[in-house]
Length: 163
Image 1: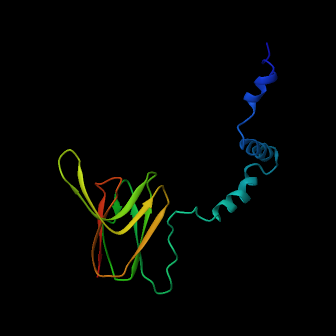
Image 2: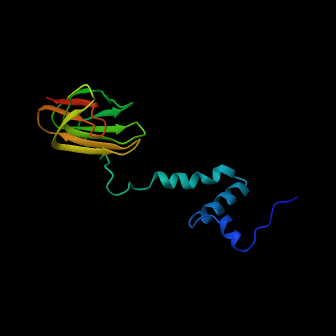
Image 3: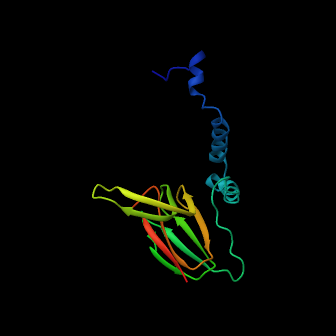
């Protein structure tokens, strides 16, 4: 016995949802072309040039002579946890985890053994890093000690010391 034929109203079930039809046609063309996966190269190149979506923090290129430092978020830790920089330095935090983190100025102190924390953001900076590869930056212009934490994972704490 062969496969049952698609009839009347059953045909709508085999049609992909709106918007996927063009993708299916493109995929079929790529499979049928002599270039195969190489046909995707122009699309990949164009997507790399796309502008970031609105509302996403981006790091700006430092001007000549400007100082910069980097903190990476790896496995639910700020690395390095203690960073010493000169006044005028721009620090860029990059999320290397595939989960939302924040860089929130202020303190996060463990209150009890149940894992509750006392949060005291000070409002100097608060950068969301919604997923892997995102970057947030802040320029420290005044000497001092700046504690910060992740508002989603309160045990993630670190500090920047500005000289």
